[in-house]
Length: 269
Image 1 (tube, rainbow, N blue to C red):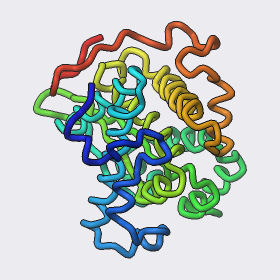
Image 2: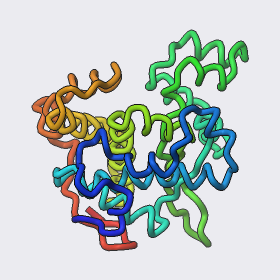
Image 3: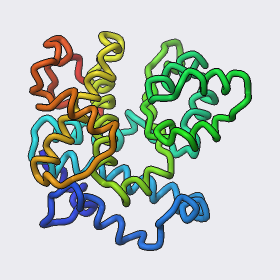
């Protein structure tokens, strides 16, 4: 499904992923470094981060020419615009997780999954290194993060989803739009799982599916432009799932039947 409202975020006659952010980049021409970002008024910075996030969702929905990726973009666009999923800008994703009440062991496991050494984790626990210093050493710690929290609504507990978006994501979009879009694909996969009520059923597959879809996006991007360069993390994803969602090494139980959600109402698949 083409989302008409998303069209003004994207170039009209250019669908290559390397050009996905051209319009938004032109809207904010003077931003080149994180220092430039942090010098901005908070309201301006928040709007900028929102524009880059929205552009990523719009690209998946409108410009990938791949039905699986389009579905992720469509679903996330609806979820964000109907406030079923909320975006929060934060300059320190790991610290924000602590402030939102996520158990410290869960955060440490997330750090390990992002490549932090056990020695550095030990130094963090002994307070010989700060979270800020750890992020400087491992920038991947401050990448976008999808968070699911139970919140009381009256007498019931409802699951709420937040996407934590660091301002550095803007620089990523400008310097390496393909890697930024791969990260967006990962996030949109998890949002789609949330909207389709997969959280209580098979949370263990959330990261597996999002990694597969991230690889699927990258494989398709490289088909469009074999000259695209990505970092080791993304190369490893492609090597693990060389045919994206059609890779032969994927357990058949990882995927489930997804239908387009009714606006404002999660699917029960």
